[in-house]
Length: 484
Image (cartoon, one colour):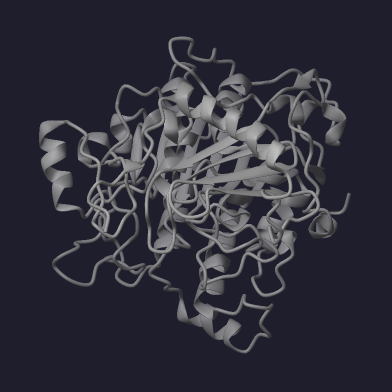
């Protein structure tokens, strides 16, 4: 299937329960897995249709498109949360945010964060004002060190590990170097850079990026991240490495190199995709990928290096448009949780293949452990599924459902939980209309709520969702006795 025709298939969902792997077209390689290098590229807030191969006519992403045409594209790929920190934790651990108790972005500027860090104790008091119908569980200020991270697992197999860019999973005692990474360039508690240009700050209140010292005044942050990534690859070309390149872009503040911005100012918009600065930020991310792929080719590493391209949540509206998906970042609709995803691995994956099987960010941990020859931890529940069989067309891939849990208020967003089971998606709210039910195969834009016409389906799916919430120990909002 041609990559540029993916957009015509994006509404197709695959049945999740006991999937026969003919749902995807694959290669059938003759060689067994050989411990590969791994490069995980995560773009912050990149929308599902913010790249050319998914149909954008405004943003230009030739290198990302080339990666897609040379690997496998997943059209039903999901972040474990519609905001960043929980998804990042799910990638690192293979565990749902509900099970981790980390269900919202970490509020690193909260004055209570420092107090909690000093005590080493997460907050426990439910929160909410008189204008809220329910009280919500507090969110942690870090991802616990007791969790086994992907970096820690890969180190047991001899991998050299490096994190570059945004971390946002806790203050200094929980930085990447405390969570299994040998090198850390840019990973701190912050969720966004004060400024995208060196020295990465504009006032004394927020003093830049503590683990990425200023180097060249005016240097663009994405370029700096890329330079550090290329240097790491070259210095460790004779080892086996795991490079976690998690760009700060394209998160706010929306800032880009002016020469690229000018290019997009005169370009015809593609619907509500029209922000020239945002387009320039995406181009810089695309150029970064191009430099990394050239480096791999020059060092003859491309054949057995897995390159994963993903986003941590949906695109921010109105900065971008996720159409035909509904709304964007933070919301329970597809625009908030469905992501662009590419897995490129010439040694194992046939170029130009497309997979419609629903996958989610908790799947990366068990999959990458599998391909690296590492046993999955058996002392804790790992929620993710090994999707490597989808690469190789061997065996069967089984999953009953995918789940989300966001028990928080954020502006117009009310607390919710979600289950996707087959083509149906049920949204359960803890304030407002209790249920919304959508058939994603026939209604990708989620325009028709079927909850009133299919009450039996709602009851059936809610029973499964409730059981999952109980099994994971998910913290549920409670009635607010002070609600006016």
